[in-house]
Length: 258
Image 1: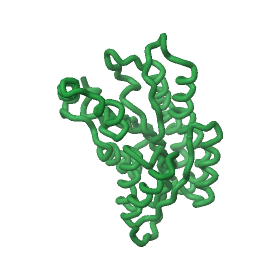
Image 2 (image 1 turned 60 degrees about the vertical axis):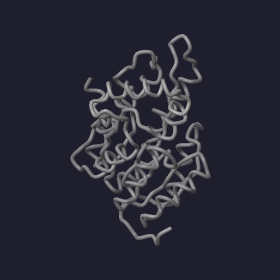
Image 3 (image 1 turned 180 degrees about the vertical axis):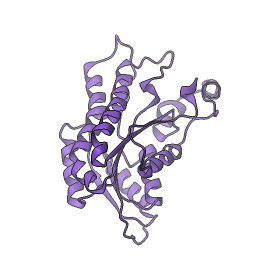
């Protein structure tokens, strides 16, 4: 790991050990921010910290499973032990359960509501004094599923949580703007992450893969899935965009234009 250099910015990234969260952390570190990575897998968290630390900024880790009801308060307390200032909070942790209305369970709804809506709200609340100190910003990672549906993939409960996150983003931007804190969101299209690979691509036959690629080319004006770096680039922009708040930034290759 490189020798750490002192910086005057600190970012907290939840789900920062893999996929989009790791790419966001890496991009913020390259941009000069110190990091606090929050994740529930100790081994991946340690590996991520080493990887991100190569850019020379300080990288701290907080091991936590944010699905636990008291986790946001515990995470905020641990962040508070490390620093009294937070410039950027990236609420990246989330989960998705797709099921028809008939098959949607209360447990699945509660899990998604907690991780996708309550955790971002509670972490923003808990870390607000630190964000006020820096006139910092909150960046929520949402999804195109808030307002675009896909035939054959019922998503009522999941889409509801993403719509709620977008509304919360705008409401907090209105509330906190006069106090100097900006609140924005990024709404990605489908991104080729390790989770996407495990859940979809690895189990496909050659024929299914060809159909998948054809559908992507047909659905996305830019003709491809997103990468984690595509999302990270948007987050770095929003972290420094001093006159941007209440924005839900679609980073989706044009998917929602069709």
